[in-house]
Image (cartoon, rainbow, N blue to C red):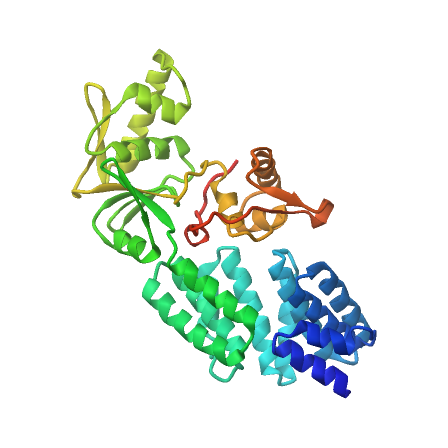
Length: 408
């Protein structure tokens, strides 16, 4: 490897893509193409970066499996950054095996971290936690140690283990300082900010207040009766009842919980649950049926009692009933998609469908509605089209992504 290639590689390792481009920007040999691709990725031109890395992989040929494997790992990392979650994971696994066979532990570890971060993004947190637990970051360079701790912190935040997340972020800050890469430091700072940013809203007894993650963790550990509008479940201690696929029942539970200890009139319940402006006898009959179903679903933790005006929630054992909602009011039909887009990242409809576990057509209908409402903005055309929205200032919602939230 010549001196210019060596110098460019060192510049990229130090987070200086412009320095690398100065050395290899006009070269078209395989190593230079690979380094140019990585530099373009660091500069944010992901499409150009992917094309350069593919050219580099073809130029290296079958006699240089190590170099080809490194190109595959770099392309997988770019796919992750551009939210191309359908990128073939078998190619990444094969590249990792090749790197391990040739003794390149650093790039093999990078391949593992890319795979684990993908698992976190698509909601397979259990698998990600098992995989990260098998890795020892100590022998790795500071940049990869930072990535390790960021993944650990991200999993802990999604598990609502705030103390573990703070410890991991503290280690990440230390490793990022040793790495000396500004972009990495900024990523750690962003994660620290997310940990201390309001993530939900508490509604109870006619009052509302914002909650940070550690407050949400404490609330879920308490004996309060919680109607969780972020995940569409009802919680009472260790009992968790999912209403994610029964939106009418969940709406009734939420309205009753917001009014507790008071009751809610039948007309108000009809308006919230069925969207009817004026309740007639058919609406009232349907309300009686749905309230009966709600009683059956909640019978282990609460009753729904009839009053002169309407109905009231009557938990069996708790003295406190609260609603845990999004920090800003979001239409339930669009909440799942907005939760992924609100952080400002651009997503394809196929990646959103994979992450949500639903059909791409369902996601496209939701994106069309959000675009018409001016809440999201499409970028590009055809298969390259992505959707994004500016982040809501002062709020973080990706930490409370709904599980199995219906959006059809």
